[in-house]
Length: 159
Image 1 (cartoon, rainbow, N blue to C red):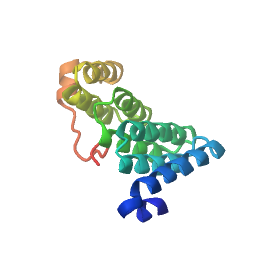
Image 2: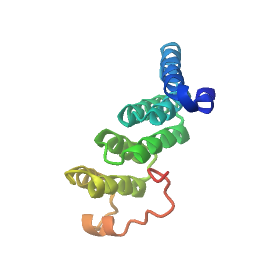
Image 3: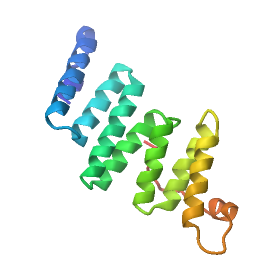
């Protein structure tokens, strides 16, 4: 994080590149460390490497999930979605995180964002159908379950 603060003026690009290199070296030693992936994602974002930053956040989310760190997992997935809410892998991972936390309304919300903001509109609808079909209350149709979802207050992807 010190690199981000020091990166100003003429040497900003080189400082950030050195910071990214250092974070990657750190990940060789502590593979899967969610904190290092968070730092790497921030550095890559500062460099304008959005796709790579999304991948770093997703790798960090998987590392946090392996450590049963639900809050860290959600935070890192949220960072990835904040950068690119149409990234199929990020949306899919976000839905799975929500489902694993038994937050089916949150999973519907994230999946729905993918369908509204996605290029083809199919991703969110497919995910939404899976979530509703597997976890809807008895006697409720897909349409009613999806329409009745209240998504207010969920922070996933709204950073």
